[in-house]
Image 1 (cartoon, helix red, strand yellow):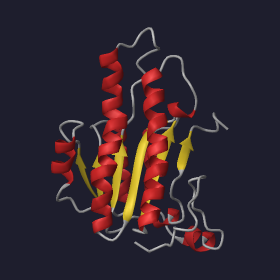
Image 2 (cartoon, helix red, strand yellow):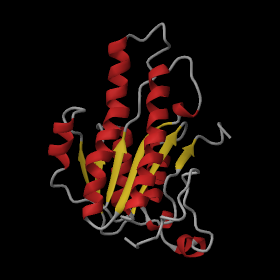
Image 3 (cartoon, rainbow, N blue to C red):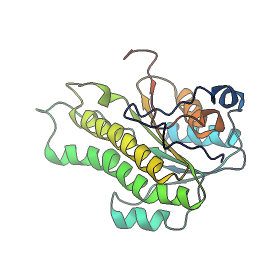
Image 4 (cartoon, helix red, strand yellow):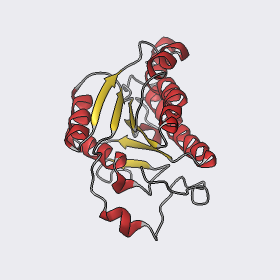
Length: 222
């Protein structure tokens, strides 16, 4: 992965886009040829599509979901994994408003998304750093962009993921370790369209993008 000096270009806007570098970035193909891709998430249509798209772009994909949202489970699962790209798939369920969600239900959504993202970053980013750099991409809902009366847990979880993405971006920039951290915030789109966006963020075509909260919603929140 090409090294990029991000220390001076990542700020509170959480987007590092170098105007001078855009022509060379645009010239890059959307490929991940020879890259080791680790997909952390449950099985399903979306996980299948992401794995297929990354494979078609030249990557080798390993899929796993640590047994539980715990320190021990993530530490053990990621301890010996070499990766250039980590995709953290955490799509929350919209399980109701305040009057409909009990505390166990709220905690279940938070553990499946927000807590798993924290653990994936804590134990995954060092694996990318150990290999000389890489890309960490979280795929989640765009519910955190604004309130939703029927999705209190999903809104809370995804808003937290947005802020963690920003924090991780700045942390990686401060260490100058050549790790890009982005999130794909999904509102609409087929599994194939979401997968294509993931591959873009994973590829060198997005080399000047980090700290991006990329909206995939056909302009609904513009």
